[in-house]
Structures are given as structure tokens and as C-alpha cells.
Image 1 (cartoon, rainbow, N blue to C red):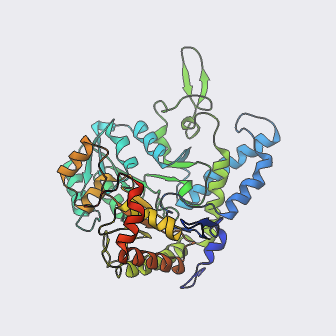
Image 2: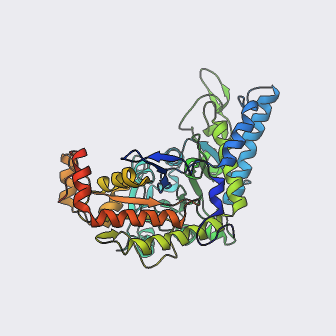
Image 3: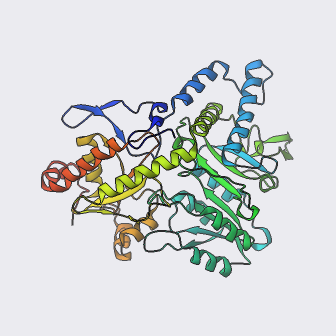
Length: 450
């Protein structure tokens, strides 16, 4: 194992984790980053490989110079590294480079055909907006329910698969919730989808850096048809994302973006598109982003995704057990079963608006968290029991305070020591609410505590 019970060896691989930042009193402390579900810091190996590659940086696929040929080779070689990392079948699948997971889902929503009248997409009530809104324009969308703890209802999934058995095209589901950290049973969902002649898309934005995934497991009925993810959530900045799916899905029809690199022949009256994936990658590609992602995957593979997953589960349990003891703090989701979740935890302290609480943690303790609805409004509304009346008021007046939560999310480099600092800070805040409210509530007119 590359960790012990108190501190991960993984930390030494991550850049910038010990940088000191100023507090409200101008003291400097090492920042504690518990906002990894939004973006992770870069790996040192990523920065090293980008720097090492940079003297060879050149345009790809078009130049005959050595640097161009080398850049082209590295760009295409990266597809193999990525495919191996997620268990894609490169004889059948294609790997398309995009900006991020959001663009990947939008691209697929445009390219996915409605074969044999199948025009229904089953999303879920726990999805990020990026795995909901793109489908609404071209398909009929229905949503799989969640239970009282916020977990996906497999019985409702099968009910709706039966209901739309002749029109279902795709089941699209997050691999891990960005709100509760629940790990969805994607292989079971895949088997159910295939049973009803539907395909499955897994939004892997919160999954690929935290747990192993295999798009083609031993049981062929459990295979994942489409997978999307973003490099910036797996320790690789520079703006690259990935869409993986069957090559045949991209062979027919026009790409959503047209331009350089997407064609074989063009006249004023005729266009012959090139083959995927290049057909889907208009313009000069982000070769630096691709190099960064490949470097991150090589490092994560060497460290072991299962090792990372097990360590982050230890952090999750440790944090929840500590949060449970804090007065007036409510944790959302199941706080007793840790077997199917990663280190994403959401909570509120009674009487303190979520944005105030997030600011206090930053200014007073140097702890970076996220607050709000995390681009998953319907899921938050359900978990918070927000009434339709409150939602309608917010629709009419966007200046009203929005319901939300505070979210902490762990990376492989976080430690129990950092969690202890968080627990102590939250205890102090909860036990001294009036002091902190007087200090921070007046900083924004949006803060109104009922």
C-alpha cells in the first residue's frame, strides 16, 4: 500500500499542496484544499512531462517537419494510453478529444442517432446539469428516481426501461455523484439498459481519478457504451476532455463542428468527411492538454486506482464520523453506509447560510470548500426538501437567497490531519455562531438566515 492510516505517500506527487495563503488576520497557513470535485491540483509528473515535451511542440497531422511528426505521434499514442486506462476496446471504440466532459456530452447529444424511432433518453434525478440539459433539445428526457437517502432507484430504472422499451435510446448516468459521492452501480445499470436494447453513457467526471473503471468487463452484457470525463478533475490542467464510444456511432452524418482536420475532400458543392475520431476534432487540437492527461494517467496507474480508492474511503469514513459530533451540523445522504461512496460530503450548520459558512472556513482557517447547488439543482432540491413554492419564488426573483450546501471533496493527497483542522474549525464556528455571523453576515446583502 502507498499510504498508512494517517498520511498518504500520494501527497508527494501533487504540486502546490503546501503553499501558504493569507487568512483574514493576515496570518499565513498552508491551504487545505477540500474542493477537489471541482478541480484537482496538477501532478508534478504532469508538469514535468509538459515541460519536457514543450521544445518539441508543433502543429499535428499537417506538417512534415520532425517536430510536427513527433507531436502527431504523441497525440495519437495518447489515445492508446487513455483507452488502456479505462478498458476501452480500440478495435471498436474511438477516443475523441474535446475541452471537457460538458462538451463531450453535448457532442454526443448532437451525434447520437434516433435509430428505429428510439428517441427517449433516461437521465436521473442526481445528474449534473451537463448530463441533463444537452439532451433536452433533441430527445424526450425522463428521469430515474432517487430514494430517501439520495441513491439511485434501480427498481425505477427498470420500470422506466419497460415503460419506454420500444423508444429508449440511451441511459445516461453519473459514475459518482458530485453532491453525495455515491458510486452508482454502472455495470448493473449497463446490463439493464442492454436488456432493453438501450445503450449507456457514464459521466465519469467524478469517477476516473478516484476508482478503477473498465468499459469492457468480462461479462459482455455489462459493457459501457460511452464514457466522458475531464482531465482537470484528474490532476491534469490545460483544458482537455474525452468522449469514448463505438466508432460506428460517429461514422455517419455531419460533425457538430466543421473545419480544418475534419475532411478528406472539399469542393464548393461537396464535402467528404474524414473518419472518426478526426472527423470530430475540428481545428488545431490541444496537444499540450493531451500530453498532460496521458502523463496523469500513467502516474495514477502506477500509484494504483484501487489504492487511491481505498485510501479515500478511509478519509471519507473518518470525516463523516467527526462531522457527526458537531452541534447543529446536518450531513446529507447516508451517514452509516460507506461502502458505495467516495470522499464527497455535503452539509450545513443550522442558522448559518452555506455561503457564509464557506467564507468563514476560507478566511478563518484557510480551508477551500465549495458551496451552493453544484450544478445539480433538482438533486439539491430533493435532498433539502425544497418546496415548489420556494422554487417558484426563486424563478421570479433571482435575488432571493438560494438554498444550498457546503461541500468538501477529497483528493488522494488529503490527510486525516487536515480533516482534524476542518472538524475543529466547524466545532468552533457552530459553538460561536453569533460571533461569526456578526463578522461575516454583513459582507453580503444576499445572506438572510431564517
